[in-house]
Length: 363
Ligand SMILES: [Zn+2]
Ligand SMILES: [Zn+2]
Image 1 (cartoon, rainbow, N blue to C red):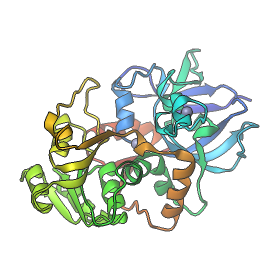
Image 2: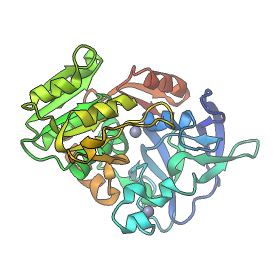
Image 3: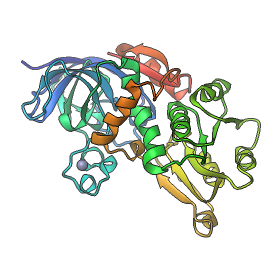
Image 4: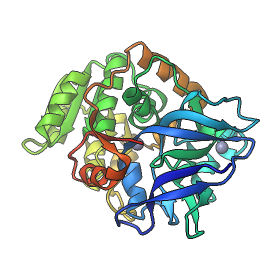
């Protein structure tokens, strides 16, 4: 029997979602059907909505979700009733990038387009963004994107693992490799910036500077472990970070804001031979960042890009889930509103207007 889902389908870019039935195709032996429970809305999703990621409509957006396995293919090692996270980054183990230890760049995610998961009532094929398609009552996904969720974890916290938690903890532990006593500056305090502040504090950073324009976001960063706050609307953030670091600049700077001038500021506020991790996305796919040449050459600054915290899903997600279960990763204050699936347009608008730290869509 085919599964009949109800999904928020993107039929035209930057237009309202259509809430329509989707008939899912039968799962292959390495696929599962997951009954969706919760999915965050973040910049990954509005990039898809605004045609920045080469999606082909009609498509179901939503890059990660938590839910319950309803149908399990024979080669998946999963069973109906399993509580799972569907992660946005797969780990196929066979592509070039998985074989060199960089599954964050897995070909399954970044080459070849999104898979067809079923069809609409008019017969047109529907694709799932990133092989996930979270904004639906049911998702048809490959098992190499599926991870068991420890039973004790609340839904809201678990749903952030495939989004802000994995990216933030990955930035700090996998990319910047923050060490005890270091100084870390975080530009932009959305959910990714907030969790990056927390991860840096957890790694033992002595100085953690949170930089933003919004008072309530600066306040939340204090709870996350920031030792210093910079209101970039009132003081020069580059100069202030230098003052806080004996004039040198920070050991590690994480850009989690988006606008290209934030990337430039991030490079400027790093010390010589410091590390700058760029995670933000501007509102145009054609945005370009201009950097001072001497900062990269003579001053030896290391500027690194980031897809989902350079994650290795099979090992990183279980270890971060364990920390989440023990309360050593804290998501209090990160989810600011929940939405029904038929309120997805509202969640998107509020995300773009920075009204939510994170909106969580409940299917
Ligand atoms: Zn791969
Ligand atoms: Zn996300």
